[in-house]
Length: 448
Image (cartoon, rainbow, N blue to C red; front, side, top):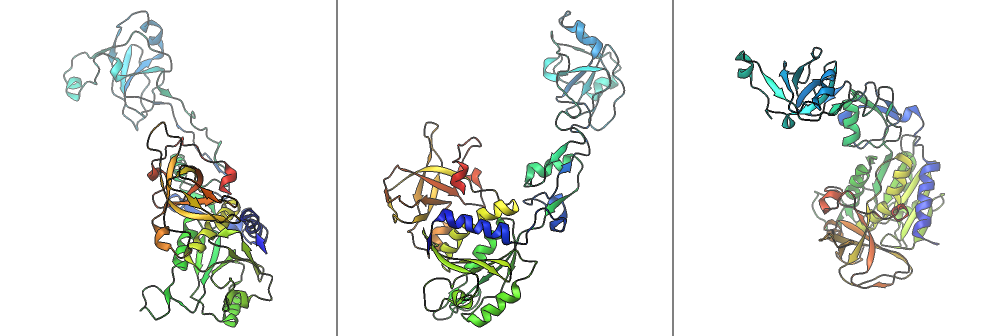
């Protein structure tokens, strides 16, 4: 059976959505975390602002607080001079403002009662605050106002950002620096977040050995476990790392049966699902509900999907690039839909730097290096393919910052033709590519 990429994406989403024990509506799936530990997590319920922001009227500028009774005549008497009152620093509750007096006030300081406006320091004469020595001199200090002082100027009103009792963040919000900063500003110290989606990860193969061990003839080091574990962690999932499994169907079947419990939302394996003579996962699950099929995708064609003991199961191919491409194409988008994390990959259009060919009947996913547009007049950036289409080229994968999509039916493309790319450099993020905030993204459909 050959399935399209889109069909398998929907199948994986359906498996996680309808077969997983992960329940975003259950209180048991919620944990309370300090703000510092909640980055990248998803709110399990809405958070109500306990205070207003700002919590009191405060000054937007360093300047002078002007009494409301002094505003009307300021415009009629250019250069009007007022006496200078006591300074108002941030962090105190100031006394009422006296008519005919201009009080020096700092940015963020609480506005005294009867203040009609704040005049920035650069708009008065002298255009700097008096020193402590000036105050100690006993001289009469004064300040000359500009011709026009607008009522309410440079005053941040209580609750102008958010009012106490309003919803600060809704349930399902992904918590990043801005969201956590808002909660901290509201005085919130802990937040209820969804428990992470838990994945049991195991790699199979007699030929695989642990990194750090002495190289053995005919064996390779296990890259898949580290590759997928870090990808899952970056996606906000929790990972239970199983020991490496030998190509023994009986032992694997026993391990899978023992692993299927209510604390796990997904079992994910790599290797052993293709057409070879020693495909251990296929042998171990031959009489189960797990379906083994081919997806019209390169790399990552062989796939497995089903349940084991009621727990969703996905089987990815054993080659490292195939495993990561399978994760990006199928599991990561499904986690976004089910668990609320991670954010969808940023999708852009890019011009090919060189011609490329692709199997007409398959969706080919190549690795590439994206360079943002060099000049303001250029519509898109460019992409250079890194390495070939082989599923073993993990060095090329490590040197890439995008996945390049060549959908089924593409055939061949010339240099300069546009392709869709996904930014996958999670360490540096989109800003490292020089992409401005207003850069046009592809449609949501392209990210699915």
